[in-house]
Amino acid sequence: MIFIVGVSLAFFLEFILISKKEKSLADKVLTVWIFVLGTHLILHFIENEGIDQTYHFLLGLSTPFPLLSGPFLYLYTKVLTNGKTKMNRLDYLHFLPAVLLIIRMLPYFFLPGNEKLQYTLEMQQQRSVLMTVTLYSYMVSGITYIILSLLLLRRHRKNLTANFSYTDQINLSWLRNLIIGMIVIWSIVTVGHSLDDLTGLNIKYEVDQLIFTSLSLFILMVGYFGVKQTWIFSGQIPVDAHGQPESTKKEASDFVQYRKSGLKSAQADELQARLEKVMKEEKPFLDHKLTLKALAEHLGTHPNYLSQVVNERFQRNFYDFINTARIEEFKSLVQQPQSKHLTVLALAIDCGFSSKSSFNKFFKKSTGKTPSEFIKSKEN
Image (tube, rainbow, N blue to C red; front, top):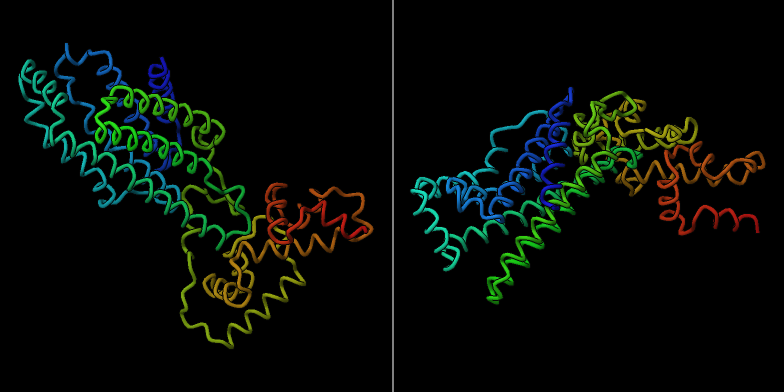
């Protein structure tokens, strides 16, 4: 039953994505990926019910599919985190192992029906070298692409803190949830089949059932979190303070790390002084969507230079630098008599924070106290 639900939801999501008017490259990758997952579930259902033993042309069709999930996860992560709008030729090389496996299986696919069925049954009973190699290639592929995806996501988070003063509205929790889902699936694949192969417990059927149940639940998760991330299944692409689409803009990756391209010590001193003056007198941090690029433009300097000064002179990334200034502004405001009638959240927003959660989290990190604890300590 769960397989039928998974297949139904997969193709329902597929219909929604295909009908979406303004599709980004990420949408296109997700569309094909969901189609592949739905098709894989259908083929497993066919094998599970023994339909392929009646219609022999269906035998073995699902074999290359496990080599596709990893590349799709990685490419989807890559597209979302670097704002790519076009695939390059090297991206397609990730599907080469699946293509090579299909080529290797061509003689098998062209066998007469009865011979094909007999050969399949013999391979399953004897666990041929090809089956063993294929199984472990699945595991290596899945684990490798999960690691690569996690590294991309980690780098993206680092880019955000280097270029944005806010992360709650542009984080990729959706993507993190997808990666976690794939970790669960590939953990079951790796542990289950390793136990079956190394111990001879003969639990392949039970392991496969668990794998495809988790795959069905993964599709359900895509639907659930996708609905919460309305921009995925609608034409509404989230935009930043300058009206640029988050899914396509490259601001977060243009200035990943500053390059020392000639900023001398005297110039750094002068930029630091101007930065401190602007922060004190003009308080640009009150803009809750302040970015490194916007502040650099205001100071008339290159973002790389500003990033270098913030990192070297203040020993912080841009996110910490700006939010520390916001915390200090909050500390000052909360002790003023005219602020007594305002809530903590109102004061936090006045200081440039965009949400209660981001304020509480950074305040605790910065001071070691919650906002309420800090206020009480000042009242005593």
